[in-house]
Length: 467
Image (cartoon, rainbow, N blue to C red; front, side, top):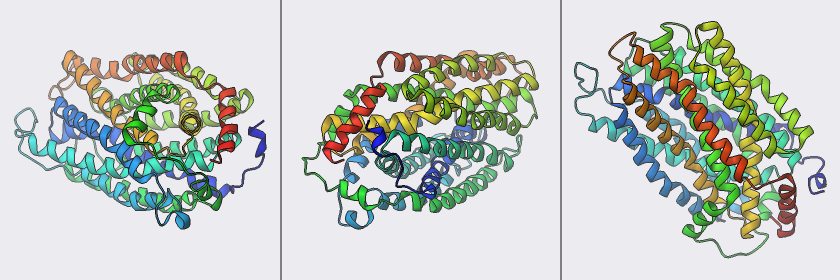
């Protein structure tokens, strides 16, 4: 009933398109970092895996405090809110520094190394990486918090969210293509010069700024959205209470756990593609494998969205897609040659499309609605700020798993054609990501409470509250 109250969206196709371009701005740097950051600091710069893990751990702890605070400080009405909106100004302020800070990450100092290729004094490099991650996280969090809230506020009905999901997923795939396939064009494997990575990061930053400008139109808040910020007076949640409330919300913490598992699994696989090309395939073009993975995902998006339109149950379809993806990932450990690896990569991409197209644009927006209804306060900054830590938790889990497997198996980059190297890479390509994803999928299946009936009930309550 609630879903049909707005049969036609007030937003133009251009607004959907423009808002979708944000995925380029967010996904390109995260894809580039997921593919190259660990390899860059491990193999090129010379940090040991556990040094990288320690830095990521410190950054994750900092973000756990910083990100909810950013949400709490900025999720309120300011003098400019009536004219410019509550979200739009912060997005405009943050997206250019976010883009430039990527260059910092790939501009590590070149310090003397020992015979094994490890930095003799790792502390300066560790501090550089930590500072770079602090700056990058500050601005990407500032932008992401307000985009995530605006997404749920702008696209309110299930019909709008399903429509936007098509743009979200398509642009996300384009961003993955750019983030994974452009950097290798500027890097020659075997040539481990630091300068080439700076050039690569600079080009990616320029692309981010261009798409950030294209995003400005879609990010603007109209009068209907702005009026909601003034529709009801309420006492603001204290930051600690807000964070605790978010963590105690079953729908939020369940989706949080499931999505961390999904992102961790895909990030580990992505990071291993560079190692796969360097240590196993010896010269095969990684772009081909990435293109097949992303092609499979892109082709699958309209299929999954068509199924969702008929099924009208995002929870159930997300669950089906996650279990399917678990099964498709396992063969990555056991591929024998280029041809079967190409087929497997395409199928994994197809399965990934289900989670990609439903998780953020539909389920996450529904969780935000649930938060507002439960608290009767249009104050989602702390929830979204808590969610923003997800990328850093994902990175930390990735680094721990990669470092642990490398250590236990005996990975040694200084020894070419070493069987232990291949074993570690194969495990991290298939079996280990599958186990991570399966854990998150089982948690989602057991505990996620938002049935389709509850989703529509929440939408009706939002109308009553004037939000």
